[in-house]
Length: 88
Image (cartoon, rainbow, N blue to C red; front, side, top):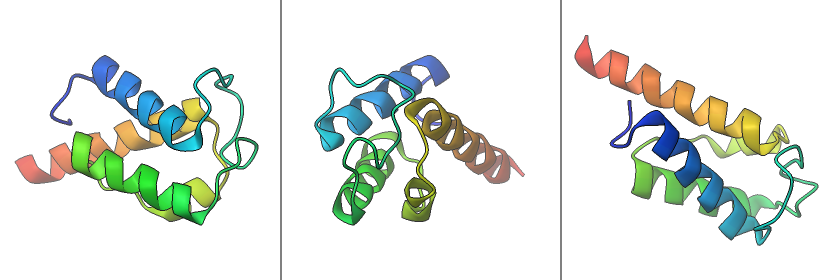
């Protein structure tokens, strides 16, 4: 998986999302664009997740306008896929 346990990674991704988008109290169903997401914020979110959690995120995933729950699910799926391929 990631360097973190799944529950910790979920919280970490949520923290990054909220900090970069400047929306600490945003409801989880608010989408990337509803929270003012732009290309620079997509780059910042992706870079921080890769740097801090070790998961490579395609910024195109953010342009699909996910909500936080969906984005966390996608990040954790990528983490699992990366872990599985490194064990193979």
